[in-house]
Length: 552
Ligand SMILES: *[C@@H]1O[C@H](CO)[C@@H](O)[C@H](O)[C@H]1NC(C)=O
Ligand SMILES: *[C@@H]1O[C@H](CO)[C@@H](O)[C@H](O)[C@H]1NC(C)=O
Ligand SMILES: *[C@@H]1O[C@H](CO)[C@@H](O)[C@H](O)[C@H]1NC(C)=O
Ligand SMILES: *[C@@H]1O[C@H](CO)[C@@H](O)[C@H](O)[C@H]1NC(C)=O
Ligand SMILES: *[C@@H]1O[C@H](CO)[C@@H](O)[C@H](O)[C@H]1NC(C)=O
Ligand SMILES: *[C@@H]1O[C@H](CO)[C@@H](O)[C@H](O)[C@H]1NC(C)=O
Ligand SMILES: *[C@@H]1O[C@H](CO)[C@@H](O)[C@H](O)[C@H]1NC(C)=O
Ligand SMILES: *[C@@H]1O[C@H](CO)[C@@H](O)[C@H](O)[C@H]1NC(C)=O
Image (tube, rainbow, N blue to C red):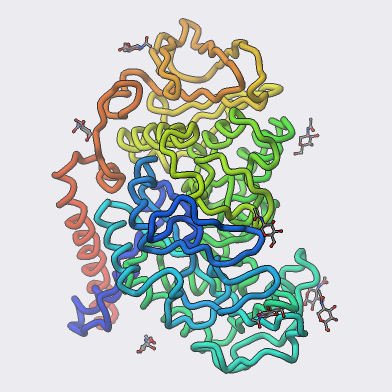
């Protein structure tokens, strides 16, 4: 359901006018067919286009990335096939620095009603939004609703915070009393206390308070409308009062994915069931690490099965293998083949894939802040090996969606578990993608794996990364040549036309066009029409309900 539906229905039926032209934010189902490139605005691209401007991650200072710089590098993002981007929190942050730096990341809010001027002006952000949407892409905003920030610079936060500096939460009554989180495994503690320290306090918003709730919801609605934001990442969702998280999720009615950095499957699935529609898939992330750094294939295969059983909708979670809070994969094992397997799984497994800036350039930074290198120092190489792999994976995912819009709702199944290989299938029989991954790394010698339960006997299939042809034998098995620990991805050869891969033409459709299975220009007009139709249908149903109430 889109955020403004109710407003427009209300104005349609009752004739009242709504306050503002609220944005048509995208639904979960809209987001499922997309893939997202996560930028960190300060570290992504500068207005001057510099590829040499120094940026020392250890110092933690602003390095000069801007919204205008982001606009200038949308070709780079779209060139990989992404059709959504996420940007850092946009609001004004605390100025000044403490021993570990400044608010370059955007997670130290000061004033909800002003923008972070380091990133640009209101017009710059409007321009970014317009440019993103003109390209048929979605815009996701990273969002802090758990806390504000206050620099105490060495002194104890309990007695040294001046609450009057915050907008709009200019009084201690809007905050939980000061306490430091002592036990992260105690969720109550994590929700009532603060994540900050004696240098930067993160005063914890009293989100049980109805004034705090309506101010946050109002701010979000207004901001999403003004900048046409299509979805949200909720920072520190684990620290937000759960009942408010649910209210926020339900009242806004837009796609939002909430950060709960927990390994337990039950925690993540319970959150999805009870509080928020989507979360980054941390359990699978940790299992993926076990597979590709320790060679434990069983754990990942098990997690894939267990999550299907435990989560209400695993295909609405966010699939990722790097982000600004975790060590980059190559910091664990610097092996290009393993990095390729990890990317393949991230993009072709269930959920909305997020790729964090720099992963395509094989950046190696470990813990925060080392994982926040300025992307411009890579020179934005579009011939980088992983850039090219991501491009191919986005193409095959898009092709699978184009041919079957239910593809993204299908859950991944395990089809092969070896001592160092994992095979997965996604999609309906005859149109599925199949990946065969290896945990052996670059030094692996050539050998064959025989897959059962793939496609029908005799079918011609294409390995889409290296463009070789295979045939399923008369007994239904597929003999796959493995080499140098590289991943293999299969798709039926007869369905390759339109994929833009291996010499086949490209259908050039946007994901929006793909979703109803219509072709190009025809669908462009239908897109809006079908939405209106849906709203009219809902309006009619509501009207009937209203009438029946009156009659009774
Ligand atoms: C980055 O800053 C740290 C702390 O000031 C310093 O120790 C380090 O040498 C700097 N690194 C580079 C590459 O300049
Ligand atoms: C914190 O203290 C350091 C060292 O005295 C100083 O350089 C810095 O400007 C102070 N920051 C703030 C926000 O007062
Ligand atoms: C913060 O300050 C308080 C009060 O001075 C002190 O007890 C505590 O140990 C400090 N915390 C850290 C992490 O230094
Ligand atoms: C968890 O944290 C809350 C709030 O800090 C505290 O009252 C409670 O005793 C803690 N529970 C346990 C089991 O430690
Ligand atoms: C939202 O906030 C704006 C600006 O503060 C205010 O004008 C408006 O009335 C608020 N809307 C609601 C629905 O609270
Ligand atoms: C793999 O991980 C699982 C836990 O999920 C563990 O039980 C098993 O012993 C591990 N296998 C190896 C070979 O380390
Ligand atoms: C794979 O099969 C397709 C379709 O039959 C053919 O056009 C293509 O040349 C083959 N590619 C290779 C590398 O043999
Ligand atoms: C898709 O776009 C490419 C590059 O712009 C073009 O060469 C190709 O002909 C287009 N394919 C179709 C089917 O329109």
